[in-house]
Amino acid sequence: MINQGGRDVRMDESDLKLIRLTQDGIELVPNPFKEIADELGVSEDEVTDRIESLIERGIIRRFGASIGHRTLGIVANAMCAWNVPDERTEEVGAVMAGFDEVSHCYERLRYPEWDYNLYTMIHARTREECEHVAHEISRATAISDYTILFSEKEFKKTGVRI
Image (spheres, rainbow, N blue to C red):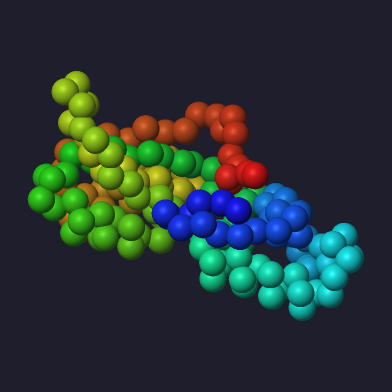
C-alpha cells in the first residue's frame, strides 16, 4: 500500500513488476505488450487492463511516448528564464506553454540576486531557432526581460523510477 495524495492506494506485486517492466520504455513492435505479458505470465489484455487501473487509481499519472529529439536532429536546447510580473504568471505561463517548441514551463521562486520566476525549455535544430522562438514568446507575452541558457551537455535524462 502507498499513500497517494492523502489516501492509501493498494498495489500488489504484479503492479510493481509491471511498472518496473515498463518504466524504461516498451519496444516499438506490432504487439508491444506481448513480451511484458509473457514475463508476467498473463494475457496482453490483463497488462493493458492493469495499466488502465494504475492510471485510474492515480498511481501512474500518464503513460505516453517520448521521442528522442536528438535523434531527429533537434539538438539545440535552451532554458529561458523570464521575469514575469507575479500577477501575470498564470496568463503568461499558459501562452508560453502553448508554443510547440516548449516542452516544459515552470514557475519558480525569485531570489534577491535572480529576478526570474518563469522558465521554459525550448527545443530546436539550431541556437538561432531557439533564439527566434524566445523572441516570438517575448512578442506574444510582452515580456522582454529574459535570458537564454543553452545546454552544452546532457548528463542524465530519465523519468521517475521505482
